[in-house]
Image (cartoon, rainbow, N blue to C red):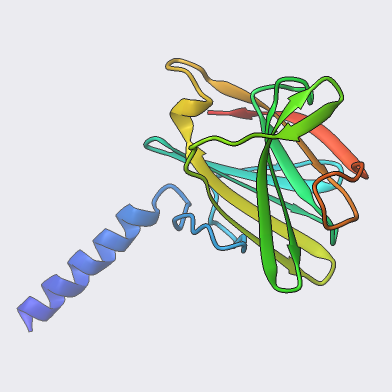
Length: 170
């Protein structure tokens, strides 16, 4: 009986320690669950979420669109922003990484390891991805400029219907 009680106490303590920061752990699965991300910003037409753990930077966006959705890191404008773009069509996720140049962007090929997931549900698109924090945040840096946008079509070239910018604080 004492061993069972000790096990229960240790189990509860372990769960409390694991979730003490309010985060239940981020799963890159195209779903954004309540409490999954420690940081949230509500923008005009989208919700932005982020979590930093070790050298992992996890970002999610939720917006009312059936088309493409994108998050750009490193600039408050399209120019110079490294953009992660995706859309969900016929049960399949499509993803590309683009680099902003002026008021345009083009696909870049690199060896960056990006874990991503997209999902559409009832007119909303959910986009999550994970990159190396050190690729975007220097030692001692406390914030990161971010742009986000979405369009109404399932492709990477159509004009955005909505765009915004913000700063992620760490």
